[in-house]
Image 1 (cartoon, rainbow, N blue to C red):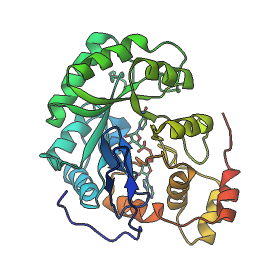
Image 2: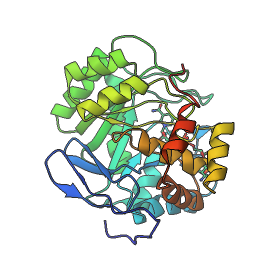
Image 3: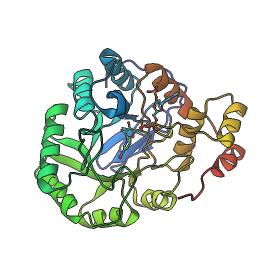
Image 4: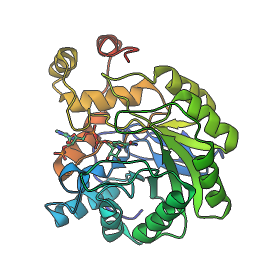
Length: 312
Ligand SMILES: NC(=O)c1ccc[n+]([C@@H]2O[C@H](COP(=O)([O-])OP(=O)(O)OC[C@H]3O[C@@H](n4cnc5c(N)ncnc54)[C@H](OP(=O)(O)O)[C@@H]3O)[C@@H](O)[C@H]2O)c1
């Protein structure tokens, strides 16, 4: 990537990828391998760039492009998106802002849900739905092959039990055809993660997790042992920002924002956690990059740990 780099306060953090190559980033957290691709652990989630309710175009089109270009300029090499955002809006913004993509930039997308007239997210996991979704993602992003595709399971209320064999085998077939490089799952139960791994290798799991919502603690540790990334969505609480007296107390003590503490805690929680905090603001993006590098003491961690341990 050739864009400008800004000193955001993170120490240079080299981390070996699985091929033994290493990359250096000034972003907090260093890098992590998604299969043969290396990404910065500090990524960017593009969902907030679409219009209200993640439907339609952004109110500030140029502002949305500026956020994406700022992310790339800061050295972020992991952008999370989905065809369902807008729908198709965030993918087209990413293409407009960043295409032709720097070789180091990796876009992770999701298939398995569409949008209805009411702004709902109905599942669309029939083989024909998934083939169409992959084709649309390729067209909208201007790519011949997608770096990582997550199969989104469950519904807006969270993961639901049940076999993922048919849809995941469809994606594995598209991977064999060269349209997808790596696979992942999202909004998945631990059983579904294991079922997917028995069908084809996965490089990431993207589920809801943050300081206050910690249902996946065991799964995170299990995936860390297997070298698989865990990518929490709603790392800052999503549409309802994280609020906690303990979080505010630690933030006040450190003269930091609760958002910074929440991101720094996630990076400390496990080395396989990748951040995809969302924002539609360049200022917030810069703040988050700087904040995620906040050093947390053992005392801070102990206090924060009490907030949502093994809840759910
Ligand atoms: N797999 C799935 O089912 C699924 C579901 C949801 C999301 N996702 C992915 O996860 C990513 C992250 O989720 P998310 O964006 O919904 O939630 P989030 O990262 O937890 O929070 C985003 C919210 O926090 C605000 N924010 C960010 N930085 C801030 C700061 N420094 N100060 C104050 N407010 C700040 C944003 O508002 P501003 O715009 O004003 O900054 C936005 O409202 C999404 O972009 C998407 O890619 C995946």
